[in-house]
Image (tube, rainbow over all chains, first blue to last red; front, side, top):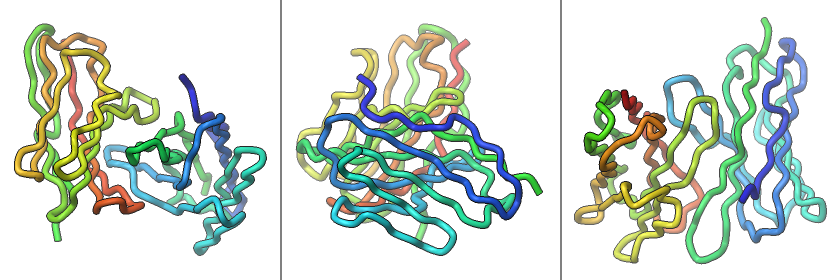
Length: 113
Length: 113
């Protein structure tokens, strides 16, 4: 069953613009909400993550906003750069006994120079 | 130190053949995950090893898939009687026990003809 819904599927942003990617999860207990960045031919790499006891976390140009009541969290990339062009995945982690991550379907971001 | 390594990087096989994919996790990492990523898709959880605990095999798609982890380090994912739908990139990740951060290998691209 689909527990995580990520949107949009693809996104084109002008250099310097703001990229926003959303992730909605269903009625499942998650305790950790990361975003991964993946470049072609590479494995994903952790970009930024948040725990459910805070509503926002910022690291440089990257911000996670977390809305526990709405079961949604989003990634904001400020001042987007061509080097940010990659595929982004949300991957909330379940609490049901094993540290199992449920990956979203990914958002392909292209930042135009 | 070295990151997660996987071998081979590419594997082309004929339908019906068995294949073995290898993952060398980061030294000291007790948790090891296998994922499958089909073209343009998100990551599908396959199996999770944590120390000496029984593995979580809940993501294995059929009994043709199996995995083992010897000595708490190297892991091998075996696919028997491969089918064309098994074609995908198989990714391995490792982490410290109960750590938040997974470190991914570069993946093995499997093509079944």
